[in-house]
Length: 170
Image (cartoon, rainbow, N blue to C red; front, side, top):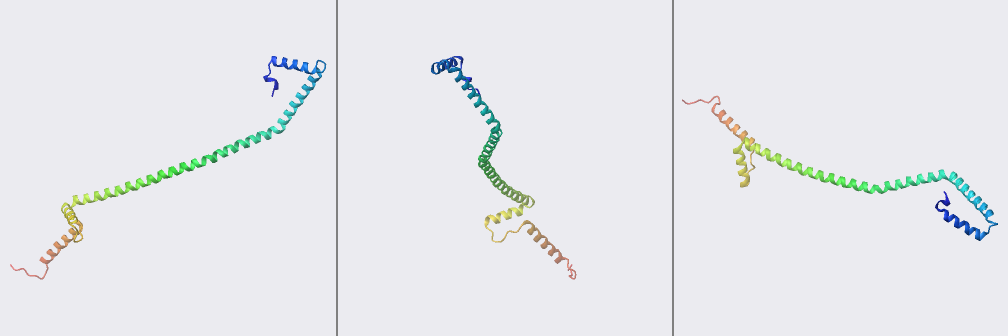
C-alpha cells in the first residue's frame, strides 16, 4: 500500500513549500524525520497485523463464501420443488391420456370382436341386431347357443328315427 501513489511531482513540491512556510527552515528536517519514522512504524504495524490476522481473515472469507453458496442452494430449492411439481403434473396428464387411449383400444377391440362375429355368422348377427333394435323381449341368444340348440334338435330327430325296437312298416 503506497500512500503517495496518486501524488505527482507538482503536488509534492507544493506540499514541501507549504511545510517550509508553516514550520520554517530550521524545524523542517526534524519534522521530516519524525514523519518518515511514523510512516515506517505504521507500515510495520500493518504488515504484522496482516501476518497475524491474514490466515484468519482468509478463513473468514472462505467461510463467508461457503455461506453464500449455501444460501444460493437454499434459494434454488423452491425452484427445484416447483419443477418437480410441474413434472409430476405432466406425468399425471400423461397417465390420464394413456387411460383414455386404453379405453379407446378396448372399444376398438369390442368393435373388432363384433365384426368377427358378423363375419362368422352374418345371419345370426343380423338377427341379434334386429332384436336389439326392436327391443329385447327375451334375452338374445348368441350364435354359439343357437348352433348348440340346432345340433341338439338334429340329434333328437336322428335318435327318434333310429331307435331300436321300433318296427318300420313297409
